[in-house]
Amino acid sequence: MGTEGSYPETTRFNASLEGLRAVASIGVLLTHVAFQTGLTPTSFIGGILGRFDFFVPVFFTLSAFLLWRRHGPRAGRDVSWPRYLASRVRRIFPAYLVVVAGVLLLLPNAYRASGAQQLANLTMTQIYVPGGLAPGLTHLWSLCVEVAFYATLPLLAVVAGLLPARARIPGMVFVAVLSLGWAWLPFVAASPAPGVANLQILPPAFTCWFVVGMIAAEVEGRVPGKALRALGRRPVWWALAAVTLWIAAQPWYGPVGLVHPRPGEFVLRVLAGTVFTAAVVLPYALAPREGLLTTPLFQALGRWSYSIFLVHLPVLELMFPLTGISPFTGHTALIAVLTLAVTVPVSAALYVLVEEPARSMTRRTIREKQGSCPQAVHKHDIV
Image (cartoon, rainbow, N blue to C red; front, side):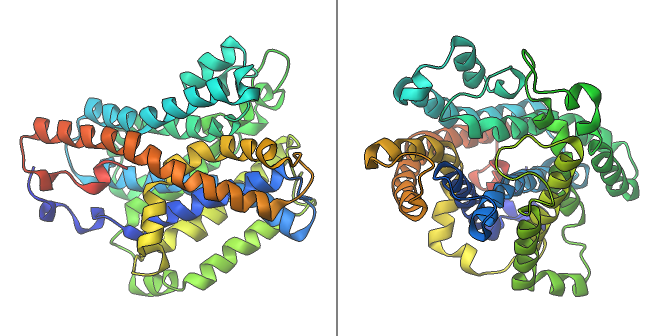
């Protein structure tokens, strides 16, 4: 493997995406604060913050874009899939296990979790186990979905590589449209039920959100100038994202809060999330430039974003007994500020003490197996 300069231009580090991770992690934090403090989901602010859960598809799209551009057929590189999977494990599990173990041991509600819940959360299988979501860790369902994508990416890359280049994007769109039928399958529509997990949130349901990132990776570097100029109009895209949030927050669009949606309502939610993540991610992925997201603050928060995602919910749950405020009784702004103020330094420490050592180990392993200079390890090899 040569130096970094030998990599295609389109695979270079995109600082905007690092900053976008920061925005997504804080967005997920705020949607949980809104729910836990009882902010009315039918109010304007409550509805918008309630749909900030659409920052979850932003994470999915970012992962799909970064991994597909490095390991998809267009990358044109021989990939060691065992090494890829090992790097994913080292990237995800060290901080995950520290947080899950800490929550199960220290958070009062989670301490009473059943043995099955504990095992499911430690093995990241909680979405497949009836009643597997444990207090303080319920948000990790989305990480289970993302890890399923990591695990299937080698197969996806091999299958896509068998297709002519011009057929890959239509194939992705076809699979995404096909996935919208997941919620209508009888055994999915009948869940959750006694002894049956909520099959509606299994990985196939969210294919559209990953496909947005994969298509972006396919067209990166080949976007016409007129389209690039349109993507460069950031306020327009954020306005589209905001309008999408508002529409998805309306009771006529689908149930608000944690009401279990019917199949059609679930599909509408997935489609709204697809529009939202496309509006948020594509401008920064395909037309990157210096800006707010590339400032040192957002770069730091972006580096810590995975830890922010992991720890924010248990921190939020601790804010109520520490402040004497009961859940669902308001004080949204205060709880949000306190949760953020505690989450960020804790996440920074987790990054320094756990995440970064694990990433450094991965880099050293890649260098040793490549037998090349340090510059050969591209920053986006460790997403």
